[in-house]
Image 1 (tube, helix red, strand yellow):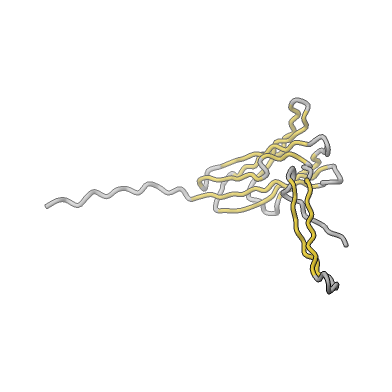
Image 2 (cartoon, one colour):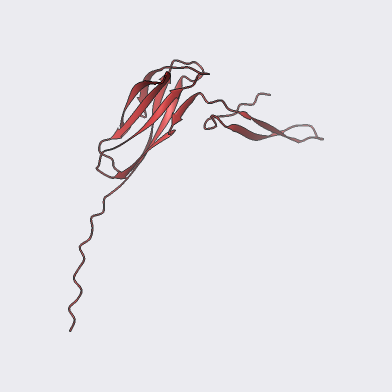
Length: 155
C-alpha cells in the first residue's frame, strides 16, 4: 500500500492526517491509519499571499520577500503568472547579509472588482521546480459624500 499526502501549506509545521482503510478481513473490516510528522520548509516566503485592496481606479501595489533556505538552495530562473493576470509584477534579486533572496513586487495599475491570480517562480532545484505566490485583488467603488439637504422650513 502506498500513501501520498499533500503537504502544501504545512511548511515548517507538523502535519497530522488520519485515513480509513476498508479491508476484506471480517475481524478488522476497517483500519484507521494515522500519519504525522514535520514538514520541512523549502523556502521562506513572506507574506505567502499578496493582498491588494483599496479604492477602484487607484493604482495599488504589494510585495513578498522570498528567501532560499540553507537546506534547499535554489535560484529563480524565470517567472510566469496566471493567464490573463490583471496585475503586473517584477522580481528583484537581493543579497542582504549573505542571504540570497528576492523581492516580488506586484502592481495593479487600474484595479477594479475582485480577482485572484498567481505568480509562479520557476527554480533550478529539482525538489521544488516551482513556487507559487497567490495574489488577491479586492477593490471598491469610491462612494462620493452625499450632499445633505436643508431641513424643511418651520412654519
